[in-house]
Length: 268
Ligand code: PGA
Image 1: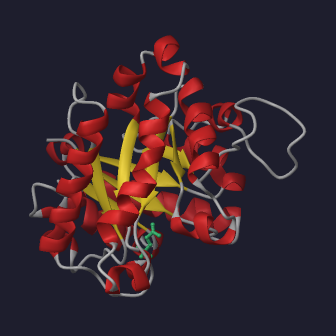
Image 2 (image 1 turned 120 degrees about the vertical axis):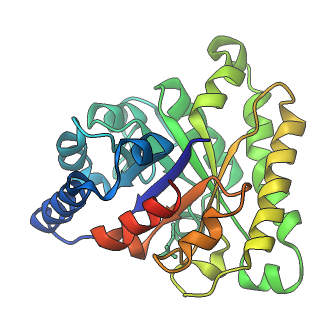
Image 3 (image 1 turned 180 degrees about the vertical axis):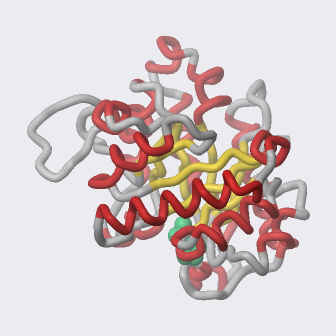
């Protein structure tokens, strides 16, 4: 089974020089044999730098097995337009990325991203043939009041809406989604806090996500679901041991080659 370990660098590192140093560290550690070719074929690595560093990262990764991704794309146009501050799916492709993260909880929180705007972003991504890592997850208050499944079901409605778009005939959407949709379950309360749900809790939630998407699209293979939120070199093995957890979306621990690749090793 193919697993995925994705580094979400967020608004880090500060400079191009630090980005290059981190990349060299990652590539050199892999080349030194930390992940052999069997490992590499089992676990697909991907790095999502901030938009300003995307072309640098993509170009350095060009002849490696690591993919690059954007952290977001414009909802307004897949190509060009008068959308100050936005970066389109086409521009992301031109910068060398094959994927984009969408709907990260920090974007939902600080940029009020809703299912409506995420639907537009998904359509833009797929129209430019890039994959989407759609992030979902509940807040601490929702977790405490046992609303996790309800919240997730509501966030997954965007996939149902996508499948109902007229676009689906043009794109053979079901086939496209098989290759280009990953869900990242990230409880908001676990992001950057050092707190994690139990592996049993994550596994049950992932099973639910897979079943829910299978309900919308019964002929799709089960969707890939990653866990994110305080994954580190010490706890990665326990998440990797569950057949329901197809990989990890990693924030803080992806900013050091050693911890990022230890997580990759756990999932390979
Ligand atoms: P974290 O972040 O690994 O630092 O908790 C994960 C994420 O926000 O994707």
